[in-house]
Length: 137
Figure (tube, rainbow, N blue to C red):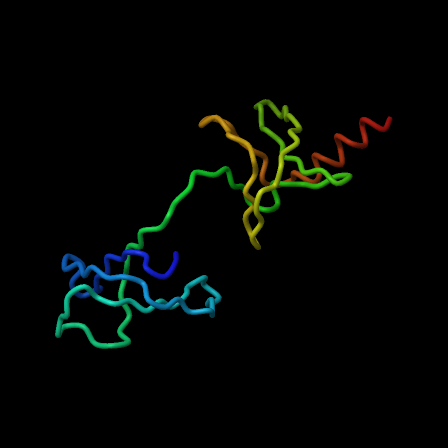
């Protein structure tokens, strides 16, 4: 989301009435639920709307297609980042990946996964330790 993003806003009382507007200000505080307040300029004035009222909105963003995983799915070892591909029947493939971006909960990786590919999310670090310990023996 950025200043100038297009927004389609509506109220809970009349969700079928859609108001076109643009983002003019984005709050800096994120609530514990992950919400951020934004301020919009409406294309057309409506006396039904009161300044400061809360609304629902669909926001158009500059989307990109990216491979992202929960942060616990990407493990680091000796300066490299890895993920595990789940091949079924308790078989896993260790795959080195390049981390492009990190947030508090998500990691974007440089890997184009086939649609049916499944990654290990929980227990990836344990799998890494088992794999590295068996290599050392």
